[in-house]
Structures are given as structure tokens and as C-alpha cells.
Length: 204
Image 1 (cartoon, one colour):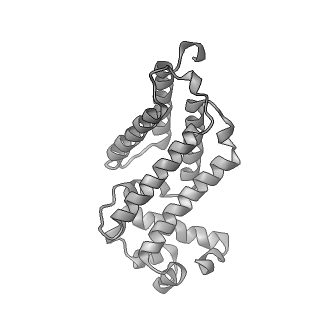
Image 2: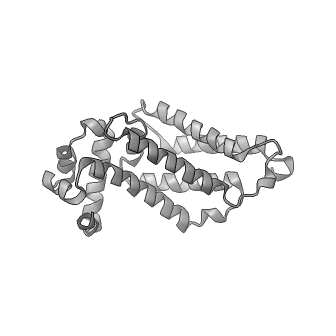
Image 3: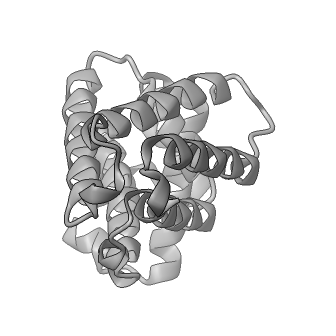
């Protein structure tokens, strides 16, 4: 990876975007290293030279997107926001901004989420579980619990939002004209609805 990381930014981005496009279009199993190399305009051998294996590149791309999102969230100091729903809204805004910045990142994430190839599926399950635990801890750290009604468990709310995301991804998987802005607006509406129903009246 050192040799890849040492490349000029423009060349790295070209290879990253080629990988995102190829994997999102064909899925892990059907995507070939030749597909990625052709899109990146480099020799097939260079993919192996930079990443080692197709699987290594696949998970590097996931980590690249995840790290970009985490870094943006940290830079914006979103964890300083103590309102549960506002923190989630801000985090979603930053996540969408990162995904928009990288062509095919959204379709890659959807492809990753529903990948079933035996070579990667167990590793995917581990990474999805780690991502959910990280998101849950981030959403709950130092929030103002007193705002919730006494019978509301914020962790259950996080699970509800997670299931909402799963359902949306399942639906979006079959759409060719995915509108991320429309999706985000709908998500914000859900947050507002939950806030109105789960917060004590004095905090609305």
C-alpha cells in the first residue's frame, strides 16, 4: 500500500474512482482486475503491485470511504452537538457530502451492503457490525438523555434508524435514477417525526 499511497493525488483518485465504478457495476465476484485497470488507464499488473489482491483493494476502498467520512465528522466537531437528533442529522449531512465527492461511492456502498460472494461475505458482516457499533457509540456519547420521554431507549431508536437505512438501500438497489438529495430530505423528515414523538414536550 505504501507505493499506492505515495502516488500523486490525481492518480490515486483516478484508481480509486475506477475501483468504485467497477465493483459497484459488477459486484465483487464478476469484477475483474482487468476491468479496474482499464477504467484507471493503467496496466493490470499495477493493481496487484499497489494493492496485492482484488480483495485487498475491495476493502481498501471501503476503508477509504469510511475514513473520509470519519475525518469530516471529526473536523466538523459534530460530537460537540449534544442533541441526539441534531447530531445524527449533521453526521448524515457530512456523510452525503463525502459520498457526493467521489463518483460511484454511493453505488459501491449499496453493492457492498448486499454482496454475497463467499470470499468476502464474512468479512463484510464483521465490518458492518463494527460500523454499526461505532455509529451507535458516536450517536450516544454525551447526548442530553433528559430530552427523551422516560420510556424511550435511545439505543432502540438507533436500531430503528438502522433498519430504515437497510430498507432504503434494499429499495434503492433496484433504482437506476437514485436521487441522494431526495433520500436525505426524506431521512430528515423521519428524524423530525421521531423527535416530535420521542422527546418530552418542553424540548420540542
